[in-house]
Length: 309
Image (tube, rainbow, N blue to C red; front, top):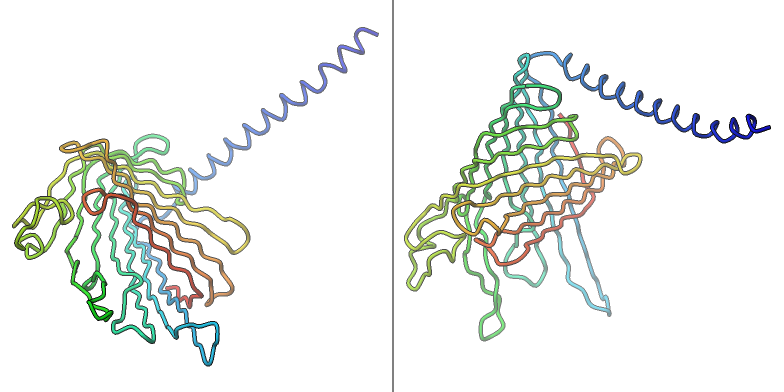
């Protein structure tokens, strides 16, 4: 009888241990399969791209509750081009978007989006998922940006505040690259140089205070920083035909206020309807105390027309 009771007690434990062992074996087999796929990727160039157009329109006619006719459009480009040669790889991604909003009662077209970003990383494989790496990141905008106010008569006026390469950001530095899969990767660069470029006419106006314009001193056109940079990329499927991409960039400047970490986070959610149509959500949050003492956020949502190439 005691043997039977002991056997009944040990049976669940044995089953649990076998399940744990099977789960570990499955994880290992999955990792080995992913590694094998990575190792068998052919040498040479590979490229993919997508052009998308998001639009939003509102029209009111005798609408008692009130409203203003408006139209907005956003054109975007997402292009990847990679190169592989044995243990060496070179990954490049270009993200560009530009959007305008026109409302019936506004004197000006206003931007809803304006950015161009180039990411490039050269890597040499070491062991497991680790690589030696060298990262380059460049960001700026296409056209002039304005601050909008109203004059004494209530008329809308604008003042030019930014332009192409004002600001422009360039980061580069060596580091270590961890890539589990194409959808999950992290780069750590402890000695990253960061250049902030601006047009000196913005820093040369009377009464300008050092650092007021993206951290650049008076009559200067560049700010140099040296610090630690971390970038992370994670893409996953939320549900069928719905994917989410997360891109995170962190930077700490060793030379001044290293505790003030610059944050640049992008979230791209694509809800695919068919090969051409999708609903797209682009969200971006930035913290950079050289530009603004607080979080900057941007969100663009709309129905998109997509062309893949």
